[in-house]
Structures are given as structure tokens and as C-alpha cells.
Amino acid sequence: MKKIYAILALALATTASFGQRHFDIALNLSTPADGSTVPQSASQPITFSLTHSGDALAAGDTLALYYYNVTQNEIYSLDESAGYYTIFVLTSQMATLINGGSAVPSMVFNSGSQMTLNTLASGFNTGDTILVVAEIWAGINDEDTDLTNNFGSFILSAPLPASVTNLNTIALSAYPNPALSELNVTADEQIVSLTIIDMEGKVVATAADSRVDVSTLTSGVYMYEATTVSGLKAINKFIKQ
Image 1 (cartoon, rainbow, N blue to C red):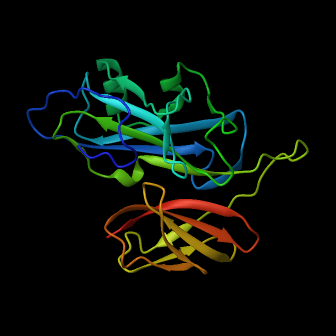
Image 2: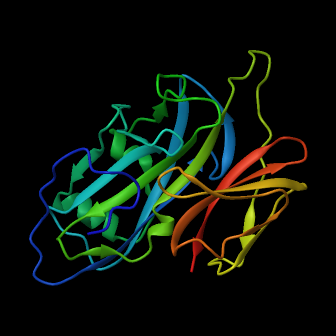
């Protein structure tokens, strides 16, 4: 079974599988907005929803939720324990809920409470890219058919002064996606630099405008970070064919 974000920090037993199943768990990050830049905070609200398509999940399958600091190459559980995932071994009730096709809000996974992340804690720094990730771990031959929608991301900026109440963000889009030789990025204002980051947090390509050559990259999922003429930053993901 493929794991694309980090090396496992826990030894997990998988459920037996007599035939391969195909899943598609999708995480839609709403707070902070996916791809946005937010100031570091001791109590950063985190809200998202999960949807699932494909073969049905069953009792005993495992849902893993975690934060991944791409820049520092470190995972954190929902209670901010470094090096750990938050694990849900699905009950029949939980499997039925996720299989229903509707968006399951993040509060379901935190006993009805708002999730928060202390991005001022040790291990988080200005400029770090943070992913909120969901993965399904089931039988050894089972797989998630679309890994590009398993996470949302945001970037940390310096903490805001007490007198500042909000921070400008920019919306990004990229084409073609999947990309074969060149990735073109558009935003609300002029882009002056692009950085391509692999899923291990390594910078693999850069450009001084809104187009970047990705022809030499191996196939897979990457992040692209754009900086605009006014200094705003945002990040999003793309697929290299």
C-alpha cells in the first residue's frame, strides 16, 4: 500500500483483504483556506470535510488524520504530538457515515469540538508549509485511486501584530494539470517567482516568473508555491505526468 506523505511512525496492523478495493478519500480544507498564507497563531482554527467514493469502507478499516509540516518533514497528530498520526479504527457506524457520500465535517472527528493547531509551538516556523492529510489504510492490496485530493495546505507567515485583524490571501490556479513539460500559474496579481516542492519537502525546480519547466521531474504529486509582486505567497498542488 502506498504512503506518499511521510515515513510511518507507528507499526499498524492492516485488515485482511481477499480482493483489492479501490477508495477515494478526499479532504476539503476550509479553514484556513486551501492554498492560503496565514499568520502563526497559538490557536489556528482547522476545519475541513471528508468525502469518499469508490468501494465501501468497512468496520476495522483505518482512517488516519494528521498534519504534515512539509518544510520540516515532520508529522503531527491532531493533538499536536510530533511523529504520530491520529488513528480511527472504523466502527460500522463510522464506516456507514463516511460511505454515505455526504461531506463529513471535521468536528465529527474531534468529539464535536473545533480543531485548533498551535503553529507557534516548537517545530513550526515562518514560511513552513503545513498539510492537513487524510489517508485510508485497509487491506494490504487496497489503494486510494486519487492521492491528489487527500490533503489541503497552508503557509505560515509571521504572527500578526495585535492591531492587525486579517491577512491578504491570493487564489492560485495552474494549467495544464496534469503537466507534462511546463506548468503555468495564474493568480489575482502578477507572479514574480515559482517554487516546485516534492512531497518530501525538497525544492526541485524554480522560476522567476509564472511559468516553470517541469519536464525533468518524475511522475507524481508536487506542490507549487507562488510569490506575487506585492510579496504575498500561496501554495497549491499539481500532478506531473
